[in-house]
Image 1 (cartoon, rainbow, N blue to C red):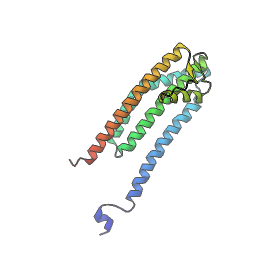
Image 2: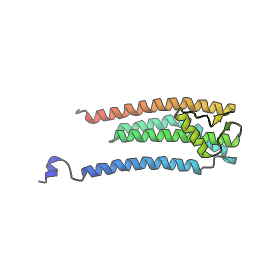
Image 3: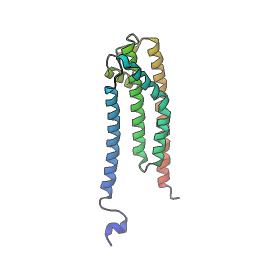
Image 4: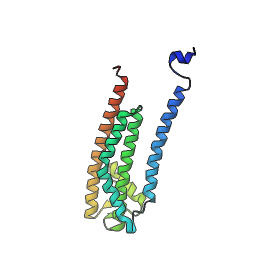
Length: 183
């Protein structure tokens, strides 16, 4: 009988587990990157400005079902910590890009609403600054629609961060507890 058979582990088992873990991180980064590419490629100005507003609305409405799906994936995952990181990454990237799309579309179609947003990068930057609650002041909502959207974004960010961290942490702890429970 081979030594690794009696001990229950194969010499390459650790390498296989590491490769699966690395693949998970690469897939998460690739997904986030693909979403960013889509943001930059989609026409969100001119005659299609409503696409950006629609993406923002879809994020606000769709983040709850997406969050529930991610939670379910964590609860059934053999790697709950990695699944949790992926869930947080996906939820934050989707939320940031959805709001950035709305800001860019609003700024391009209604120029007086936001001072300082001229490009998609400006809109993305503003949205990330909003998420980080930094508020440098270089981009400001000047119109009523932009201020309403910014207020919704702030409330959304607070709810997103608090809920995401709590639910994902709970799901990961529950899943890890199940793995260590001898019953």
